[in-house]
Image 1 (cartoon, rainbow, N blue to C red):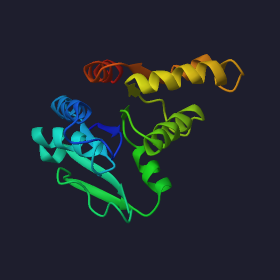
Image 2: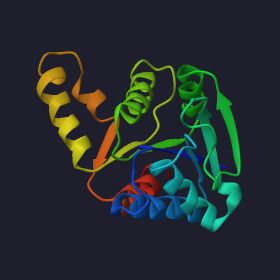
Image 3: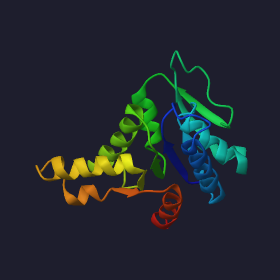
Image 4: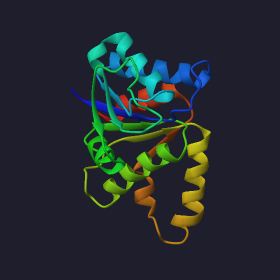
Amino acid sequence: MKKVAIFGSSRTDPDSKLYDAVERLGKRCAQAGWIVVTGGGPGTMEAANKGAASVDLTRSEAEAIYLPFEEQVNEYVYDYTKHDDFFTRLDTFSNCDAFIVTPGGIGTLLEMAMIYQLIQVNHIEQKPIICVGRMWRTLKDWLEEEMVENGFLSNKEMDYIHYVDRFGEATALLEHLSK
């Protein structure tokens, strides 16, 4: 079965619109036949796992990490692996077939950047990376203005990441790109 990693913040409030949107995203991905893989924590990760588990618990997995302030994986995870460090965790994520990046912080940025670079240097095959929301469009603008204009990134490499504004667009694009 194909796996989609959904990256996002552990700080997303369960009562927020973002949490609800990511829960629907996880559900739509599972309904489309994907196994949803997250970091197994709270917030956005919990929302994605919850959505996937609402379709079929076996479609909800996690690549967790030992953190002193986040001991357990969320209750919606069927199967998980606990990693001792971020590198092995990220390396395992790279085995997913696609990636959806939701709003988040430094950890989310790290996950997206690692996958982006592995594709850029051909350490993994090109796979869909879909960034959802305004914050990622702001990053795209910065990449174009600073990295592309200064020759540190090519226009072709900019095409490795797809930017959408809404979660519904992300699932539609995921289906289109994975055909």
